[in-house]
Length: 224
Image 1: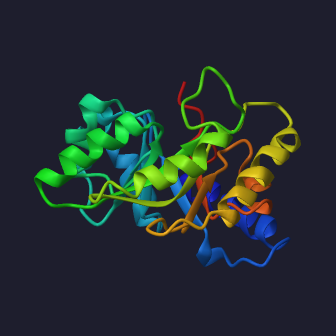
Image 2 (image 1 turned 180 degrees about the vertical axis):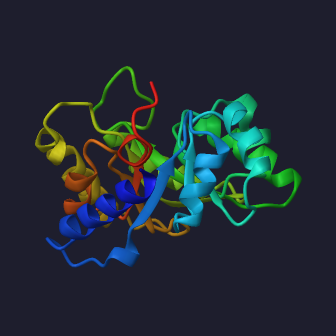
């Protein structure tokens, strides 16, 4: 099932990016493994997926211990400050830097081991009270503030669109986030990754400029 799902996803990626100047190898597919067993994750890794995303550190750590060390792990859920110590050693990229308070906690912990924590700044693109992230108007000042944290490196932006049945309805959010992504010019900040798009809307996100997508259900099926 995973092999066929992956083939279909890759076809959909190619079709979506054919509408803009991008190559398939420029797109990072992060397989979201919430509620997915280690043996299934290993099967996906053997099929060529190397980037996996988890929402909760307590669920991720037991899996990570059982899986190949070559796997790149992405933390994609809301990160509480008291979980930073557990997350930093095992996740290569944190997608969900959603406050200066969290940045301070990451800086404090990363400094202890002289490591650089790689992060994406999360933008609350739908301005939803139920979601975390910086508001649009807060992003420029937040990025300048983040450059003061020497053990933290911003590599781009992440956004989660409001969930709707018709993904065309979220196209304006993705377009606006891509526009912000292209406009940012802050010394010390590298706009390398634009992480937007999930199973229900990743094609629209890709058409609008995403180069990193987070896909779970489309790859592993519904997990309840």
